[in-house]
Length: 268
Ligand SMILES: Nc1nc2c(ncn2[C@@H]2O[C@H](COP(=O)(O)OP(=O)(O)OP(=O)(O)O)[C@@H](O)[C@H]2O)c(=O)[nH]1
Ligand SMILES: [Mg+2]
Image (cartoon, rainbow, N blue to C red; front, top):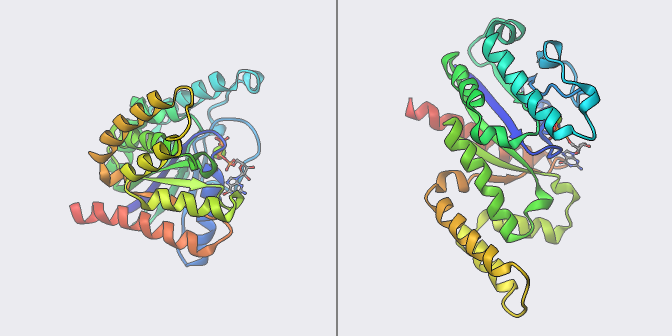
C-alpha cells in the first residue's frame, strides 16, 4: 500500500511550506515523504528536489501573472491536471517504481474553487486509488482568518465540499499559527475543540448589544451552514492548528493524518 496527501487550499495559505516542513519532520522520525509539485505557477519552489515538477511540462503564461493572476493560475491548474490525466506516465514515470510504504505529498495550486467542483481533481484522486494509494485531502487555511466565529464556520464548508467532490477523507489545517498572539491561539483552539453550534452562539453573543450592518443575515447564513456541518461531523471535527515552530504540533497533525489513512485501512 502507498500513501498520499493532496495538499489543497487558498493561495498563500502555506501549502508548500507545510509540504516542506512535514517532509522534514517525517524524515527526522525515520519516515520518508516525497513531494510532487502540481503548481504550474512560475517562481522559486519552497522546497528542494520534488520528485516530479509539473512546470517541466506545463508552462503558464508569465505575462498574465500579477495583474490577472487569478485567471492565469486558474487556467494553469486545469492545464496541470489535464496534462496529468492525459499523460499519467509522465507523473508515474517521474515518481519511479512504486513500492509498498511510499508516501507522497501532492502540493497543489492555490485555487480552491477547483477542489470543490473540478471533475479533473476528482479523477486525479481516483487515479491514485487505482495505483493503490490511500489518500487524504489536507485543506490548508491561514489560521489568522479563523479568529472570527462566522469566518471559522465558513472555512469549514470548503473542505466539506471538497470532501464530497473528491470522496477521500479530509482534514482542515490552519497555518501561520506562530503569527498569532497567545490569546488568539487559545481562541482558535477553542473554536476547533468546540461544538460548531457553540462557535455560532459565541459569535452571535458578541453582537447582542450593538447593531451591525448585515450581522442578522450573516448569523442566519451561518446557522444554515452549521446545520449542514452538523450532518457531516466527521469532516467538521478534523481541524488542526499547526504551529510550525513547535515539533510536537507536527506530531499531533501527523497522528491525525495517520489515523485518517488508518480509517481507510480498517474500511478495506
Ligand atoms: N510565519 C509563518 N509563515 C508561513 C507559514 N506558512 C506559510 N508561511 C509563509 O507564507 C507565505 C506563503 O507560503 P506558501 O507555503 O508559499 O503558501 P502556498 O499556499 O503554497 O502559496 P501558493 O502556492 O502561492 O498558493 C510564505 O512567505 C511562507 O514563508 C507559517 O505557518 N508561519
Ligand atoms: Mg505553493
